[in-house]
Structure formats: structure tokens, C-alpha cells
Image 1: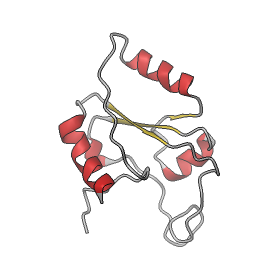
Image 2: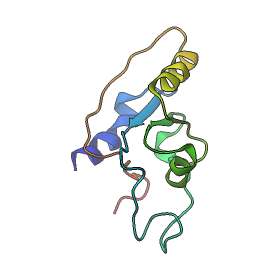
Image 3: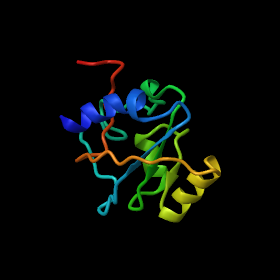
Length: 118
């Protein structure tokens, strides 16, 4: 529940309008599998941009998955990085004058869908 609350508040209170929410996970065993919501499963839906992020960017640093696997779960407009060096270069190009970072400790890489609370 803590991670849902953190991500619900993150865009409005923690992240500037042009900010990047960089989610990270080693994914040491790969992307994993969900029997209902996973690719080619009964309830799978093509990933879409997260509306609650508004003008903010989401990116993923997940060395244990390929970009193709990442985009089976996350919208194709979100960048995926397999190396920390690539993630850093992306951030340095986006923010050449530097910036501030915050760590939001969460137990999972799930992002709450605040547009459709249940």
C-alpha cells in the first residue's frame, strides 16, 4: 500500500512538470509472467501512456529485460535502459545543467492507476 500512495503523490508533489520518473529493478530472472494480465493472456491490454504523469516522462532502468520485453508492459514511448551508463547519459542530455533527484523506496515497480481508482 505504501508504494501505491507514494506513486499517487509523486507526480504532483515530488516531480516537476518536465521531470522524469525513473523506475528501477534488476529483474534478475527476467520480466516474469502473469497468467491473466501478461502478454498474450486473456486480460492483457496494450500499454498506454500514464495519464496521471501529465507532461512528465517515465523511464525504466531494468538490466534483466530487453527493450522488447519492457515495451510489452510499458508504453512504447517510455525509454528503457539496460545499463546505468545509458540511463545516466539520457538524464545528462535531458538536464545538461544538472538537477535534483529523489529516491522513493518501494517494494515493487508497479505504478498506481489513479485515473481509475477502485
